Length: 330
Figure 1 (cartoon, rainbow, N blue to C red):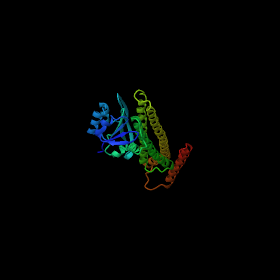
Figure 2 (figure 1 turned 30 degrees about the vertical axis):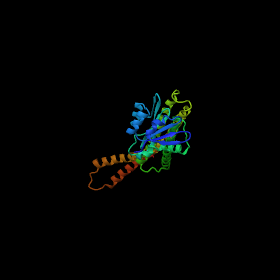
Figure 3 (figure 1 turned 90 degrees about the vertical axis):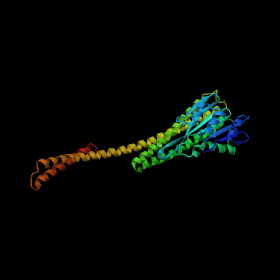
């Protein structure tokens, strides 16, 4: 089980502290406190409730799985719930939840609950990346919103990378369709819809995330004036993710429609050929059945009769084939 990480951030340095020091860190002037909670344990709940004075509803949302991104506005803090994607088997897309509690001097990030099939490292991908930037000195946020901006931007970068990966699959599928190398039709159709599902999932994450930050951007009194452009930029980034996913999904839909048109054309051609076969053979079958049941009573073959009947069948077939040709059936 991963431990809670506590960082204090100033212009000069970044220090890691024990959980017991959080209360004292909040009293330091000019220090920004970041608490990263991998799993919402009893220790984490106590920290959120007793030390950080988290709203009971915010603590509850951090403890449970939230299927829809949202923003909750409280007197001295805001709760943001976002999702990131992770590809699973058979086209499944895991929703990785990231909760952020933004206070006046602190930021809390809470991960999960995590699907047991996934590694905790996957859920910590964005926050670990931002922490490395802090420790190397490449990032020095001056407010909780700047730190939140860095983490959310990292999540958005992963959304874009996810679209890139699915787009590579879409291009491969398009090449197979245009090249006629489809293989098993059922498996190929499954691959098409798996790719579309991935794009639809990331599109939903981008669209709902933009709604979350759009709501936050309307709260001029709650968001510091210097941080408001950061919130607006996140709205723009998430909207762009939605538009990118929409564009690739439309392209994939064109591939699917082309595949369907080709398959339906093959079925139509096959049906026409079967119709020609039926037109040619059914009358002959009917004639032979009637002739066999009602006329032939001889003990041996009557060659003149057989020649006449076969000639009639040949003439009927020729006439029917000519008629089918004029109708454009073959």
